[in-house]
Image 1 (cartoon, rainbow, N blue to C red):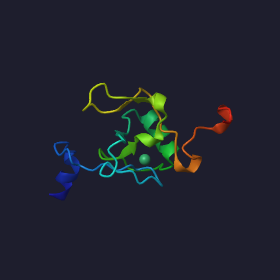
Image 2: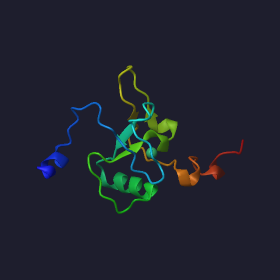
Image 3: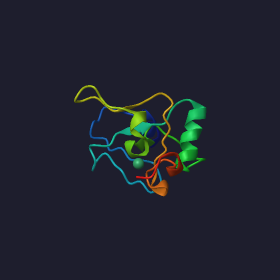
Length: 113
Ligand SMILES: [Zn+2]
């Protein structure tokens, strides 16, 4: 049935196209192999921080709801150690870079170039 298909969360198909759920971000793994796509954290406090930052609170998260690596600062991303490895997030990472803030963290905290 449709319902069981939606809940299977199958990861067997490597060609599965991932999409970023962030508003104004159209990133998709189909067209961009450089980006990585990250699932929401299971910890509810952390998850709500993601939702608030993404400005999609309330929002229903499924196993296919992903946030692309464009929204994380480099110190929150762990680069893969093997060629076919996946980029991971540090513990407690929260997406902070968005279209509406110019993909920059609060400029008052960093000196202007
Ligand atoms: Zn994105």
